[in-house]
Length: 378
Image 1 (cartoon, rainbow, N blue to C red):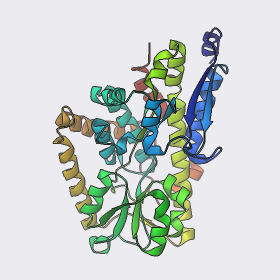
Image 2 (cartoon, rainbow, N blue to C red; image 1 turned 90 degrees about the vertical axis):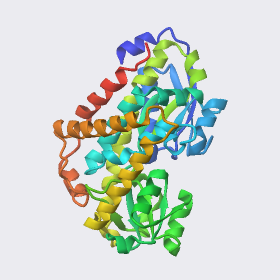
Image 3 (cartoon, rainbow, N blue to C red; image 1 turned 30 degrees about the vertical axis):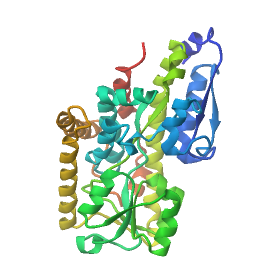
């Protein structure tokens, strides 16, 4: 920090326009606030952020446009939802179920291997450049996805025909593999739809469950170490035009402190997930996986979806990318275990376990920083 602060002594003040997806002080936006604070401190106040709260400048799916047209300088880009403009990135997003396992694996493995592959894939970089964007942190996920239902459902018979809210093509494929009927519905409408019985279930991460109080209307959670459900990662990015006008030391700092953003995001996800799972009993709900037949159907659906990604002619070298995803996800699963993280903890046990076993993320973050450093501006 002292070296950075000294390097900024001769730099004129820089103000960047940005936004957080949450109100000020909300745990949902803590990763953004931690990143802004770290950059300001490390620059000795020479870089400051003009922050708009609760996506006041641009709705979440429109941030890439706001970065391109100058309304924002820094923001989170939901590239995983936009396969038309970001087909290679969306492929990494759609196959993020391959990182699933217990709660620690489900957070750490996708953050690791998707970061690695996003940084190494020239088409991913080109997709962002084509939109006038510079990647600062290639991956942060919105949380561990489960299926939250108003009634307990574990078998194909119980799941058949159930109306389920999905977000993304991977969830649609997974829902159909389980015999469910996928429905696309705005987040703001999910609670009422579950309450009124218009929906039976919803794919959701802990962030969405907390924000929307979904456990009050859907307390039965389908989650287990074998249940592989896609996540939808986003990227922290900035306007490439603004980036190009910055001095090198400012570029380096904005990029380097992406590690603060990622670590804060992961810590927040684990904390929110602890809270959500810990509240299930009080809502009269349950936590568990699928029965054997339903699990086999989900696995077949995921395999077919992976094959479709390999056949996607909009992705350069799609079969090779799929092979890299399979290899990297397996390698990062081994890496997480080798670092000493307990990968045996089940979901229902997680709140009690984490209370006695605080999670130290630094060993993992050292591996992530090594990846980021390979692509540091110089």
